[in-house]
Amino acid sequence: MTHQHPKGTRDFFPAEFAALHHIEDAWRTASINAGFEEIEGPTFEHLNLYTVKSGEGIVSELFSFKRAGGDVDYALRPEFTPTLARMAAAKGRSLSLPTKWFGIPSHFRAERPQRGRLREFKQWNVDLLGIDAPSADAEIIATAVAALATLGLTSDDVVVRISHRSVVTSMLLEGGLDESQLDQALALLDKKEKMDDAAFATKLEEAGLPSSAFAQFDGDAVVSHPGLDILQTELERWGVSDWCAFDFSIVRGLAYYTGIVFEIHERSGAERAIAGGGRYDKLIEMFGGPSCPAVGFGMGDVVLSLVLKDKGLLEDGDTYLPTPEVFVVSASDEGDALLPSIVASLRTSGIHARQSYKATRNVGKLVTEATKAKAKHVIILGGELEQGNVVIKNLESGKQIELALDAVVEHFS
Ligand code: HAM
Image 1: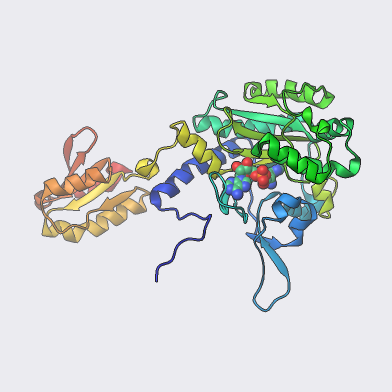
Image 2 (image 1 turned 60 degrees about the horizontal axis):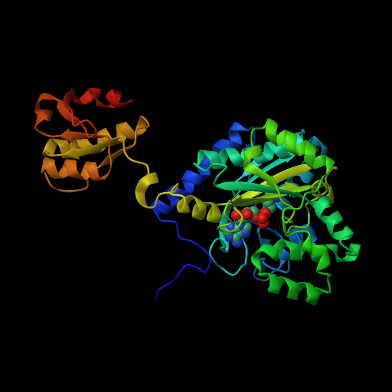
């Protein structure tokens, strides 16, 4: 009987996992350098945490379940924002503001698996609580940009497309929509880019929405909004305005956003959104906490990896696997007996040390093995042990020295 991993999930063998860590390292470093502190929550929550305010899009994609024999409804987390808001609400007034949190949780969405969309993925979350100002929005965007830049992307490769919930809503209302049609209109607008014009027109007709109200989202609509002018200035101050463009076709499917919303895309429109976020000033209060403004984003590993690979910025294979500082081989009986204690002392001193498991005494073959493992040095436990010495070969320079056995660990520390 053979088993496969469930559809839309991934097995990470060492090389793939190391590539994921390469991305996570950039995320973590950008967060920590910007003063965000790491948090984590449970992988599943009570189902109603998501049904309250995430919006139709996510609710229809939940993996929900009950405990065997139980009657409480749970769901695997499809996103982190409700957990974060719940955690902030639980701290209540004891939460010192501003609070800057980040996390790299796994998420689960019962989507149809396709390029850039899986059922389990990693998502970097960065959220700033307690500051209701465009400077906070810009700092959040600058943090996302910092990680992308570390990974080798430039403002020619990606763009942060920024919009504003109230600008879009007033555009729709001025376009002739009724207040009661807004939620439906926003949800459709969010999907507009993924459909051709005819399919979108059909959807509008089915929903009974006037197409005239949506025409204004086609080109580069120029809309002035006082908040956006200040944001533009802040983005310039944070040095990321080259990476950003206002774009009112960005709506975001999640219902809790109250102010700016943004998505990060590959510039030519290849792939889905790399990241999405915005301001959600009411969510923490809605979960029983104090009134607390908040802004943040989530960046997934799946689309980002595709974009990085397309641009030659993410290698396949072993590139990101850690390589040993030292590879210890034995070519003598005495060496065989000494090898474990040498390897163990090196490791105790914090040195990445590996050994050969081969029975051969052929030094050439053993050194080849060390070279294949991409070790920097090889320690050869051979005939020199009779004088209490070992041979250390630097595999980069090819230089070889003889050193007293008891000086080896210190030599590498
Ligand atoms: P979201 O737009 O649903 O936002 O997801 C953000 C990013 O997660 C997407 O741009 C995409 O890269 C990745 N992503 C989403 N679904 C999938 C999937 N099925 N497979 C692979 N990647 C996916 C949120 O989740 C908000 N909670 C973000 C946020 C944080 N807003 C404020 N703070």
